[in-house]
Structures are given as C-alpha cells and as structure tokens.
Image (cartoon, one colour):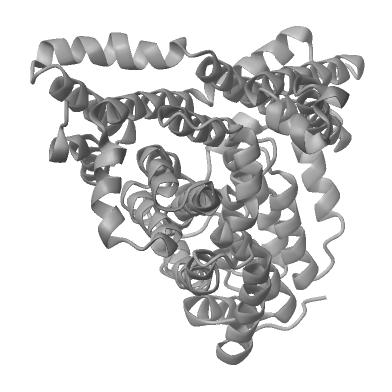
Length: 513
C-alpha cells in the first residue's frame, strides 16, 4: 500500500513536537504511535499495541540492536569506574600541571577535552570544573572557558573510535542500511565518515587557531578584554550557573593516577582493533581492511567495553583504591547515566521501523529526485539536522529523525559514493545545531561546569559556531558533492579560518606570567 504524504507525518511530527515540548523522548514515542496508527487503518488502540509489541519490542529483538544497546550501557559503566577510581581526575591534574601561562592554560583545556573523548558529559563536567580555577588565575573569561569546553565535548565524542556515541551512530547507520537491503558494514561506514565531519573537525581546529593566535572577535573579544583589563572573569550582571552534577563524579580515593584511566581506555581501543581483525576472518580475509569490513562490530564493541571494564576493575582492586562493592556500584551508576540515551536509541529504531513500513524514505526520494541535484544532498543533510538539533536541543534526537531518511536518499540520488559524505553531514550537522542551541544539554552543562552565565556563553559561542559552519558549507559540503577530497576541504577551511581571525580578530590579552 502507498501512503504518500501520510508517510512523512511521523518524522515531521517528531521534529515539531520536539521543538514545542523540548521533550525528545515523548516526541519520538508519539511519532511512533501516530505512524503505527496510520499503518493499522487509523485504529488508535491497535496502533498503541503495535507501537509497544511490534516496533519497540521488535527493535530490541534484533541481535545487532541488543548488542549495541548493551555496549552503550557498559561503556557508561566503564566511565563510572574511571570516575570513581580517580583515573579521569588523574588525567586532568597531569595536564593542569603543564599549564604555566594563559596560552598554555587554554591549550591544556583543549587537550584535556581531546583526551577525555569517551563521553561528552564526562568531558564537559571534568574539563570545566578542573580548569576553572586555573583560567580565573590567568584572567581568562568564563565565556572563553565555556566555549572551549563545549567545543571539545560533542565534536570529539561524536568522532571518537570508542565512545558512548559510537554505538548510537553505528546503530542508526546499520538500521537505515538494512531497511533498504544494502549490505555494508556500519562500523566501516562510520570510520569512512570521519573526514567528512567538517563542522566537528573545523571547530576543533578553530579553537587551536584562536589559542595560538591570541585573537578573538565579537562578543568573545569584549569578554576577554574585560577579563584581562579588570580581572573580572564574569560580567557584573552575570548569573553564573554552578554545577552540583560534578559531585556524582567526585572520588574519595587517596591517589588519583592518570594511568588508571589511560590503560583501560587504550585496552578498549586495542581490543576493538584486534577483535575486528579476528572476527572479520583474520589472515583468511586477505587484508586488514577486508577483515574490518567483514567483522560484526556490535559483537567486537561488546568485547571491548566489558574487557575495558574488567581491566579497570582489576587495576582498582589491585591498588586497593575501591572495594569490590564500590567498583560494582560505580559501574552500575555509570550504566544508569546512559538510561536516557538508551531510550532515545530504542525509540529511534522504532521510528525507523515505522518509516520503513510507511515508505517514508522512498516517498521523499521520489519527490527530491526531480528537484534536488545529487551534489546538494550533503549540504541539505547538514542543514536539516542542524535546524532540528537547534530547535530540540539534542543531536541524538536529530540524528534519529534524519538518518533513516538521509541514507535511502543518498543511495537513490548518488549510490554508495554519495552515502559516506551524506552520513557524515548528518552526524556533524546535528552537532552544530546542538552546539548553537541554548536548550542543549551539553551547552547548559558547559555553562554549569564553567560557572558561566548561560546566555553569555550562548552569545559568545554562537558567532564562532556560525563562522565555522559557513566555512564547512562553502569549502566542505558543497565541494564534496562534486567529488572534491575532504582532506583538501579541511586544509582550505583551516586556512580560511586563520584568515578570518587574522583580518577580523584582535589580540585582546597578553601572556600572564
């Protein structure tokens, strides 16, 4: 049966409801329910039953989905242990010890954000709270601290090889590919999209350029000038947000050793690499690339997350930092922190199932085929999730709504060659929208952990984010539609960002010794 325009109601409803209510979980559930009701002949009772039994429970019956869900939860558990055994604080203190002046302090903040790549929430809370006293001493504005914290949270976690994000992202990719019977390895596609995450990568590069040139523009320049000239890291009328959430990450261990976090994290990465090779057939597969392509990454990621948790637990016990009960409690607390993310993931899979049965992607593809040039698809799939994430305050919600539509469109308009840049555009577009949104959880948490006035953080960060996004569009997403290498785009984009700072920025501070 052809549902035509009815097929686009669930995804559009998800966007509109998320915008109005700011409740992505409720919006996704209602959208699944409405879609199921349409599929059952507009019978709401049967639609409700189908929502629960067919779509929600059905998404969990899939072994890949179940594996990715357990992986996401267990990575949260690993983060819980690393937080409680002092490992993450140990990394922070190691980096802070190297900060001697304002430039090195800002670089240490950026570097810490890169190294705590496994979770954007942990990244935000740890980096902001750790560096705040140091940046205050160096007369660095709270606005600048919040900007760097925010710019090294989701942009880093979303492209990290192992993080709380990867299960969600590969899950969406795999589910969307399966719906259109495309046999590609989701983890392999994820890896190939990294160079196409133009906004995320250029945002990280832009922070570095700002740090080493010492230049700022707009509202950030005014904030930095105030902090340097008067020593006021906050405006007189500011209402700083103070974090209570960081207490959940506090540890009471006597020794906070950096290697208690680094070794388990490296172990997770090594287990992932070796596991993909073994699971994919090893020597029999012919090459490492073929082995990775043949591997079931959902199984391997499970090995890695539980292996990392086990190594972290053993190291903690051997040093007598925590009791066995405290380790288990820390792991469980970490798992609990992933509850909301897991529910979003399940509902995203459910909405994907509804859209598949309604033929949503096919309907949109048929409309756009005649009106949208294939070379503009990466651009459109950057803008749409950006708007959605800005309106809803969640990049995960935006990804879950847009990805099931983007992948079939990419295949129909440009085949597999257009697939990777399009997927990359969706994932980084959601990060951009989330980065700009005043109602985004990571934006709010950046203000909290930096003890910065929230709207001051939004107003100073927004111009920087928009500049990076515009550069990403004109040297990244438009050229890539014509087959230009992403590496060329990244190089040119970096030079342009430096030029913008050089011509429009100004040095508002000097080194504070």
